[in-house]
Length: 429
Picture 1: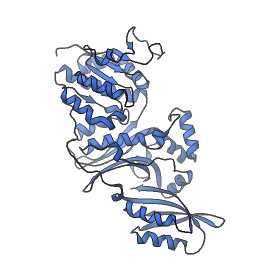
Picture 2: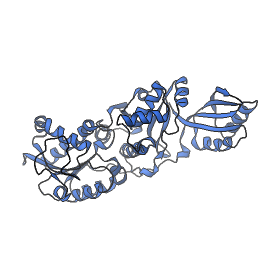
Picture 3: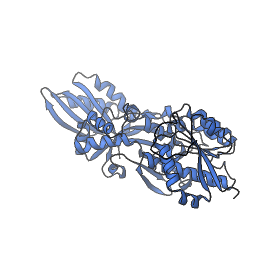
Picture 4: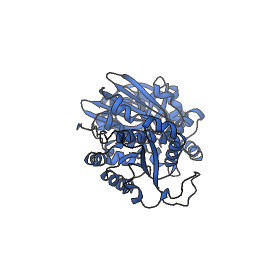
């Protein structure tokens, strides 16, 4: 090995950046032994040098000039923990064009611009590592790209957003409604003041786009991930699901079939026997099915300073080893196929449907007729409560096509005896 030291530059020093600094310093001896050289943080880009970060930082380590990191010939590896697209993408591409390997925890950037990043890395003989972009400290990117590479992956199903999983857990265990669960998550720092990215499913969709692209070796555009959040889930839905032996989870689901790759994020009723059903609070888990390995599951904390920083530092160590052996540029893009994205209307699953209807004879018969005319078969019909002249009923279908169900619901919503289709939730077995 020609070098005894690898120098890194960091873009950003927020929560994850502080964790990276702490791990590199606190575990310095072990890291040096495992890599075969010391890893030194040379420069860190921040907005405000004077801000107290609760760390004992060397004089001159912080800078407000991005060029001190990305244009610095003494820096071998750039760690991007700024988040967002701008200016992170511009900085990252420039670093790659200078031949510096890139480590990023930025799911937004990887999901939307992964192709550009990998092309820039390949053109300039360097690498892109992004383990921390999905599920924080849980190893899943490298297992999919390397450890499970001999498999034909059929499906990846995950709980990949800790905020919504915490909220649904509290709604299940304490009977809270959506607003109460959100307020509790915000008070504990699990949810942002603007929780839209979490509760509407955008965060999970970005992560699923990354996972599906790797699992099925084809680029999955973010805008082709079907998306529903948890804002319509009520305490009643949680209660009725439990009575039916299900739990409600926000799932990221990716499957491959003859019609193409199916990618969807939405709440789902999950059998209490499923391994993901017991994943609660802020924990994440990803369930993978391969033709050779069978079923495997990855579980742990999906966010936080040290779990996410753990994945970042592991990537730094891998990049450093490659550079020490003069073999950078070996982490190539695995999206070599061009597979179609399966239209949502062609997906099939079971459904839970909650309706408010008039409490009089013939109502169920008329609803069942509409479903039957659209090839939707009902597995069970349960009347939950009667209020005045109205009744609430819960239906569970057999496995049916999404298109057929939606066609039936359009008609049912217009029936004079149906006051409201209160909720429709998919059921995953």
